[in-house]
Length: 476
Image (tube, rainbow, N blue to C red; front, top):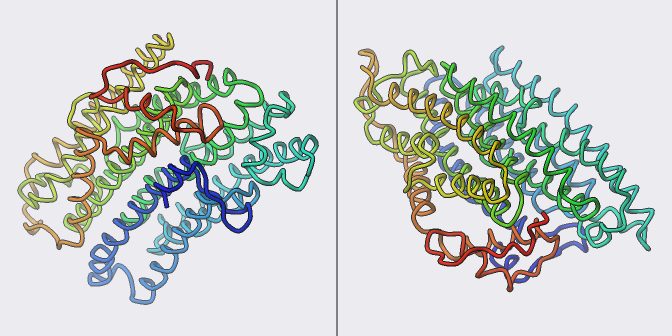
C-alpha cells in the first residue's frame, strides 16, 4: 500500500475520510515496521515480567489490549483525511497509551501517566484551536463549506485562506501538536512517560507516537506555507527546534537513568527534525523526513536494549548498569551499535550520519551559518553524554551479583533486525525507500503529489549522486 501510494500520488477510502499519500505512506511504513518489531519484543519482555511477578496474567491481557488499541489510534492519525478525526485520533493516542504508561500500578508510573494525560490534553487543546481556525477560514472561501473538514480539499484552496488567521493558526498548531512531538518547552511529559512505561511501549512512544504528532504538524505546515509563505513557519520551527536540541543536550549530560537519557535524546532528535524543516528547501525537507525514519530505527533498538538491561540488572541506574559486554555480550554489541549510531552521528556507516550531514549541508547552502555552528556545538554535547553512557554501560566493571548470559531470542532478534536496517540505511538506501522519501518531500515542498519529475533530483542527494539538486522550490 505504501509503495502504491507513492506511485499513484494518493489513495482515498471511505469517501474522503481516509487518505494515504506519499507523506502518510512514509509514516505508515514506520508504524508498521516498529509496531511489528515491538510486538515481537513484547512477547519475550512481558513474559519475563509475569514470570518474576511484576505483572499478573490479567494485567498482561490488559497490556496487549491497550497495546493494539494504541497501534490503532496511531494508524487512524496517519490515515485520516478529516481534520477533526485527525485531532481526535491524536487525543485518543494519549488516552490509550496512558494506560500502558501506568500499567505497573506503582506510584511513580501512575504519576507519570497522569502527568502525561494532563500536559498532552492541554497541549492538544491548543491544536484544536488551530484546527478550528483553519476549518472556519476554509469553509468561508470554499464553494462547498462542508468540504473544508477534509485536509486534501483545504490544501487545494489554501492560497485563498486569510494570511492573518493562518499565521495565528500555525502558532496554535505548533504549540498543540508540538507538545505531542516532544518539542521544548512542552516536552515535560516525555522523560517521565518514557522511563516508567514498559520498554516496548517506550519504543513505540519515541519511534512512532512522536512521529504521528509530527505528521499532523507537517500537514498543517504545508497548508500554512501555501497560504502565507514559509518565512514565518520556518522561523518558528528553527526557534523551537534549536531550543529543544539545546535543552535536551544539557539534560543528556547529567542523566543517571538510562531510559530518561534516551527520552531526552528523543527530544533532541525531534528538535533536529524541526530544525531541518525550518531550514527548508529540497535538501532540508528530505533530511527532516530521512532523519525521522533513521531516528525511529535507532531509538527502537536502544529502548529494546534498555529493556534487556532492566530485565538483567533490575535497575535503570547508570551507576549500577556496568560491564554489559561481559554480562550479556550479544545484546551489548547490538545496544552499542544503536548508541554509537546516535552518538557518532557524523561517522558512517550509521544511518543517522546521512540525515544529519544533509541537515548541516542544507543549512550552509541556505546561509544559516550561525545556526549550524550552534547546532554542531550542541551535538558535540550530545556526543559526550551518549559516549559516556555507552562506555560505562558496555565496558565498566560489572557487578558481581548479576547473572551472566543473554536473554531469549524474542528480546534480541528485533534488535538484530533493527541494527541491520540501520547499517543498510547508512550505506545504501534502497530505491523503494528513496521513492517514498522523494514523494513525501515533494508533497511538503509544493503541496502537490506530482513526483515523476522529482525522482532523479532526490537521488542526487545521496552519496552515489553526481549532480547537485535543483533548487526549483528554494523559496520554501
